[in-house]
Image (cartoon, rainbow, N blue to C red; front, side, top):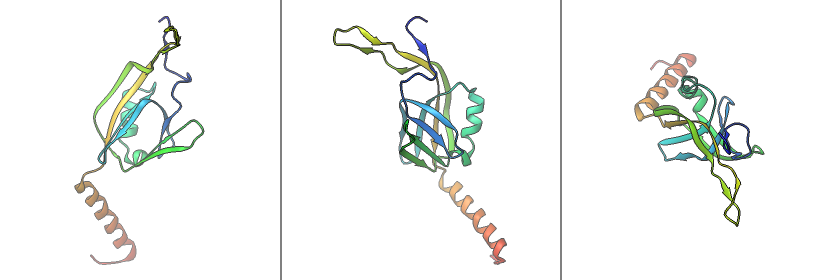
Length: 148
């Protein structure tokens, strides 16, 4: 495509997400948004959707997600978003960075398009948290010889 660079290692957005297991993905502009119960991610990837879903469905990998900048400084930390929700999708032609214009109106930098994944994670419900705590208590009871 003339004038369009497909996503890759271009200098456009230097922030990335880093999962608890160390896996990193470059973010697009506005690639994270959160509420107290949900975290929405839009990041660049060439991996198949099935591989991404398998990784993000692993609560151990997503129990802490950081947004870091190009020098490795942490910009944000998202704890406890471990439940992968819908939608889970890929867009092969997503606008990574828009074109830039000079003072004369001429395009100075072409738009960059690339492949991105859209994911939504949420905090586990109360039942899941209670079940997790119950398992921890049972384990501690067995290890300490305490009769519940």
